Length: 239
View 1 (cartoon, rainbow, N blue to C red):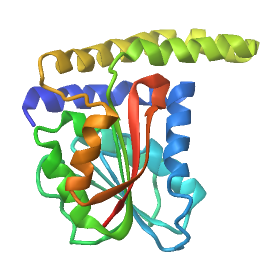
View 2 (cartoon, rainbow, N blue to C red):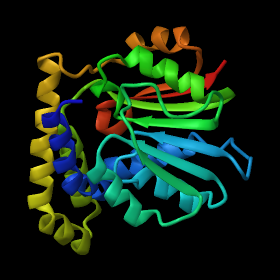
View 3 (cartoon, one colour):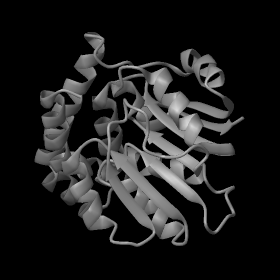
View 4 (tube, rainbow, N blue to C red):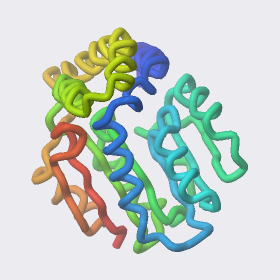
């Protein structure tokens, strides 16, 4: 990753948790946690590959405190935020380049989560093969990736739901957060623009299915209506 790319994601870390206050984002992460509900092993090992500020790991930790969780991210600034949320012996955070071989042994994890990371990588297929390598046979991959990068859909959906609820406190809080929403929206517009220059790759579900299968996964579910119809979600099993 270039220095400018690193600087962008480190700056993005300052505003990233603003997304966590939106209804579509909250629902997305609940969907991801729901994909792990079949795991009954109290000592399950789960990796969030591209953990960002640790929002997803915190949700999993709160629901499954005995699970052994790992978070890997390329941005030091993201991990600094995550470390403040996850002061727990069962959570290990580390910095690493997701475009390179992952720093884990074969068949280490019962589940791996990848949320809006794959599109940023120069070789998505190589990364998927790495995820398969570190997953135990029969382990679960939960993969979310943008296919329709239109960030305004996320914020419009959030505002529509807030105003439909007609709760004065929620409306007031949304108005108070509006400068932060505008800032993160602007950054997401820059991300979306990189799809037009082919710097980032945004792929619909039907184009991804064969790739996942060729990398050693059996697709269990595929949805393209996630995150205000901007992302695809796959739940797959390592075979």
